[in-house]
Length: 425
Image 1 (tube, helix red, strand yellow):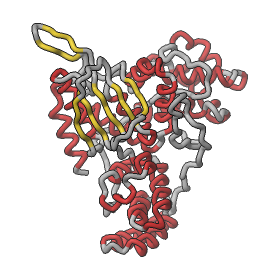
Image 2 (cartoon, helix red, strand yellow):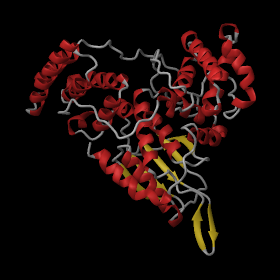
Image 3 (cartoon, helix red, strand yellow):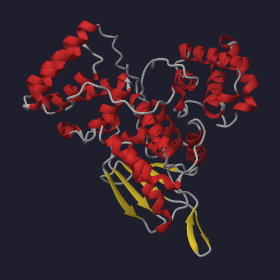
Image 4 (tube, one colour):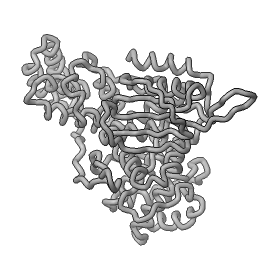
């Protein structure tokens, strides 16, 4: 349970456009080259300037090009206005392309609400094609009056006192009244989940309220989802796939396939995962060397897979579904090309960047994924269904976060300090 209503604040701020995982549309017969914005810029600006007269598919392709390859600092004010015009039209008018448009608008630091949400789709093991699922309506209640917020806070405080005495049913009833008064209260929603998780007949309701908390999409709600991964009150839900999908809780194994040259990367990976709030981690060794990382995942771990694949910072990272029995939800098999220089072995990559700004940005990206995981899930679906595109796709992921940041092999200690700060919140 949580006893504090204060949202968590961090000593950094990342603009809305900082996180832009590309949306790879599953229904397109072909995908535009990720780095082809400059080559098609003139035609796309013409389409965006008169979007009502343009073909929907052309607008979608141009949005995809913009998301993947446009350098914002090279756009003029007039070009930005034209792009915004086209993306807003696509967002408002297209049932297929609105997610692409939203990602583009986020890059321009223009916040728009989600029109709908698509739950994690299963991937057929033989074909790799994602199974179609009906979209769901996001939880997005209107703002609450100040008087109702005060009454809801008092009700929620009373409910938490009951939970501390393990009076789960009474506490749940009081917290439900608090949520009815203030449906946007992260504090009341989170503690209602804690109460219902301990009532056998209300576990589905607990998962529904947990999803509602995620849909709020605030930093405070995302931080509570991360807290949920280790909350003792939520142990009854922890192995449920929906709990894992919503909170990002996953059991991770990190495997070193290249021996001593891979040890710096393994250390960096561990510290990044710690900074993201992933505490369930084991190490392993594989004596079959790999020249690139492979990330194996279960369906409920797709959104986290997209983020972790990006953070591995290796252009040839492969993503594959787990097709064997294992307790792990995600397995990272680290690999890199090893060369010998002056008799010493050296890997061509040390894995994640290990600077403070990188882990801070990663934490923000994780919050965005927890709030709106659909784009990340679609990205993984596309890579798995067309594995020949895996290398370039994951490489593009890493380049779309305000440019690729420099490696800093000697800054591991700094990241440990930041991880300790995050874990103490």
